[in-house]
Length: 629
Image (cartoon, rainbow, N blue to C red; front, top):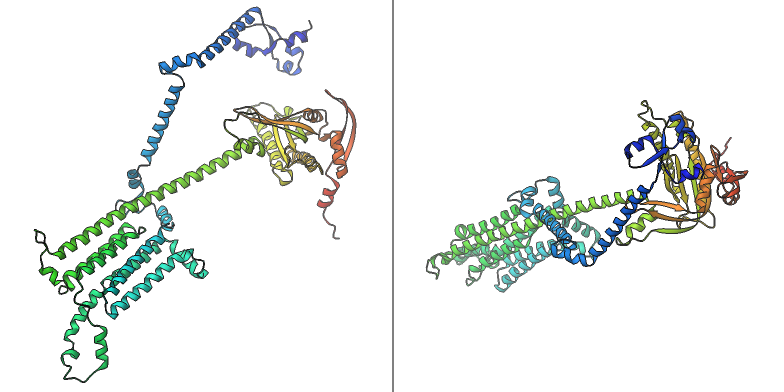
């Protein structure tokens, strides 16, 4: 048996590796320095590991133990599974642990987002405004989805008050006040609802859109509408006192002493008093209706609602107990039918105050819920944006590892699908580019940080190649991998990028190879080096696929890949060697090529190859500047 045959059956290790292995294996001198100049120059001592019978017996016992472990595993999957479940172990226990972890996580999430904690952290205690001005500004610009319903409810309340006035046959001035209130209510209602009406002018719809898009403007309009309702409700009450004073008007008392004045008579007739049978409780109910209408406007803040309701109740109580004591005099003189003997007016005052306080508390709770919903919505939006940003970043990171079409395939596929990704590509152009003298440049010295600076320069070169690949004209070319100082790329891997009629992907690969050579010349000029590049190109069918579960790697296999690699390894420095198939594609397109002749290719025998010398004639003519002079 020759030494080479004996060497193929043994493991060749260095002295440093043997030192870590200890005395577990038998070795003999490897004599690596006699067969390799690199080992001889570095004076590296090598050994060959000899597999003996004891080694085989050890691994035979290990295999037997693995087989027994496999049988035990099968037993655990069948009968042993029942025993584990009875003892509290196995899959049920794992599921239980997972459920507990999920419940604990949800409990912590609920505690972190509790209502009381959020209110104390983000909102003020009574006014409920946000502590952060930017959040309050965002909340004020958010449109209330139920805004139209609030004003419609207020309009219905106004219609009720107006209908009661008509049924009670109020005087003309009160009727004029109702008409004015109706005009204000109708104008406000149309201004709010015009945004969704296509029959109105565009300018009016634009104005409505500006009104409804601001909470502060809507709050001001809501206060105006509530004031209109209140004035409409108490209008007959104010005019009732004025009309009562007309009983002592000079025109009535001294009619026989003065000449007839038609103007004075018309004034008296217009301001005649309300019917004497109108009960004062009517005004209480109208004001109560106004207070309830105020509660319909949920967009009012707690402070503003308190001011509005307090003003309505305060003004009406002043009218009851200070201004119009004669109007409500009968209510003060008559005692309530209850045993406590409280006047009805005081009961009405208490009812109004309690109703206002209840509506203020209800509005505060509603506003707190609305603000917390907005805060949760804002947090959800921020988390969604962060998730989308992270998803885009992960997708971009995945696209840097895998081609775009492969990354999309894995993003859309079923997570439980473990099928191997592979694709048959019929006409792919493959490129191998190597910097063969980089190994001579790489030296581990203290001056270059133990070789780190050399790797930094190689990284810049590879990054420049990747940047060229990002240009639009090379969008159909995919980088496969870079191993050491060798760069591998391919074009025509998808149906959209494989042009079987004009072979644009092959021409793009030829231009890319020329750009790589030009880029390395540029690097040499600025780094004061003398790197040489060697490029090989071939076309043919390949099989593309992804290998690996944890660190997947996209790669291509096939005879065309091997030939392209041979075009690189058998090529010449600073030249681009292509096969005859590539020549037949590029030569009709005007690319200058030179026949090298026949060369011996490992595994293929003799092949006729060509050197690509430059760009196509069409591109050179397009880039050549026009000679004006």
